[in-house]
Image (cartoon, rainbow, N blue to C red):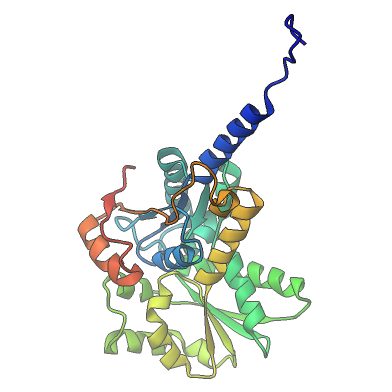
Length: 303
């Protein structure tokens, strides 16, 4: 009580209003996402479709792609730089590493360095792969960096233990696939011949499910599916990753749906911004073909 006989405790309505404003401030921050180039737009598309009210900032590091052939230490430094920029410069509330190579070598370090949740594409993809197989023989294709890291062997083993099944994995690197996508050459004789050559070990492994373990590879699904045949199901980790993003946002009370209709959160459609470390005009032109109308313009990443 103060000397006027009134309580000195803060007014409940005022406290509630301050708390709500603070929650809205957290909720209204964007999701941050990065990849070496265009491939991560498959994940961006899935996140936009599943979470249409969320804001999204995407950085395509096209000036330094492809990541696959580069040393792990170099890719790790790029990933740290990009993720740090998304938090520092764009106030991201959650980071999605929409690049298998970067997620394979940098995810643990990013989680220890950053104060926001960090999600990769390897673990969601591995779970989707294990859940989809019926003969327990599966395969994953990825860049040299991803496959050599052993990240998918570990992730598939963990996912198999979770469902009490023994799943046999064939992992194969597919150098050259990313470059075809980045040149927007997703069909034709040249890429088909490369696919036939690279996918040979998988075609003889009696697998029934194949994970496209690089976010660029879904753009080659028609070619890959034709080479593998109708008996092999192709898995794209984008949808599984988007589901994890939704769940992590909700668990941390930073999803827009948490304050849907609340004061200060009147927007129903998320805002989407796209940045490139390379040629922004080319990124916007190619990216629009891959993502859709949301990518109307690209800006220079202010690294």
